Image (cartoon, rainbow, N blue to C red):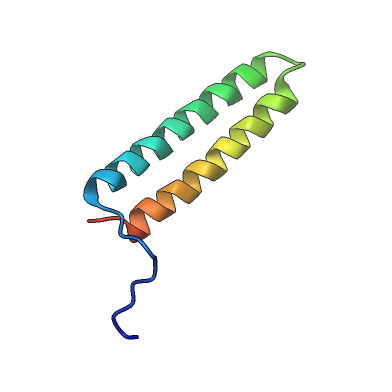
Length: 71
């Protein structure tokens, strides 16, 4: 079993680029949510929650794209 790949699928170059773009877009959305959430007192908690969720998702997608993606 020495020829097994750590994942069951291979992420191609095109998919890697798309995952990196998605991670960058999620970071931009998180930044916008943080700005809007900081301006509105009632939206602060929900905006920060969504921004944190978007940043966490972007981090996971970025790690997948950088670690297993085509170089």
